[in-house]
Image 1 (spheres, rainbow, N blue to C red):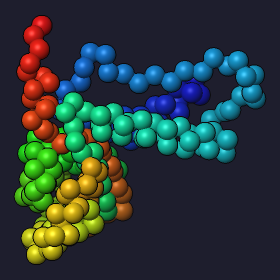
Image 2 (cartoon, rainbow, N blue to C red; image 1 turned 90 degrees about the horizontal axis):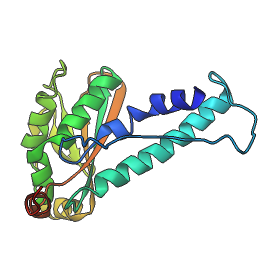
Image 3 (spheres, one colour; image 1 turned 180 degrees about the vertical axis):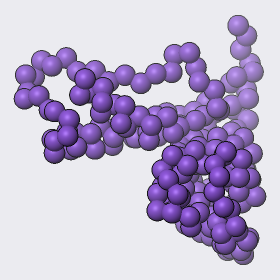
Image 4 (cartoon, rainbow, N blue to C red; image 1 turned 90 degrees about the vertical axis):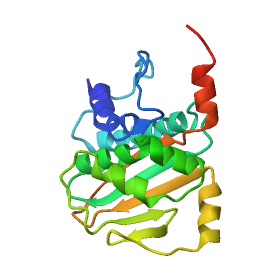
Length: 200
């Protein structure tokens, strides 16, 4: 029961925050198992030991989740989206997953195009009632939008950022103190080939 609790507490912020193409396969699942053979002293909820174990489990789950996203079919780049200063953590996670799940954002990252309009659109249709009149967007730490207005940036610096195999998008809502993160991958020609060239 304690292990299930630790899994349930951490799955929402890790495995449930990844997407490759928006589809969930019938065999997509998360399992954590322990056989109890070490005969260690039992860890109970609401103890410092449980908190420490849960944090370590979260680290492992997050790293594995990111590897799944990075290993998506035909993927070239891992995309991480951080939504910060949101009214609550759930809204932040929903917005982050909306951005990383957008086919237009995915293709922009594949084409190494810092298209802030596609990012802002995905924030807007996330189904979260948050004001978007004071939003900052950064790609790899380089601002492309401040206070919901586009800003000039150094093309060469942006080219270097977009060429990396891991691209981080940060959306600052200036509407609270919570944050959420999601991970995905770019959408490449190879994704279409892999999913189109076999027959059932």
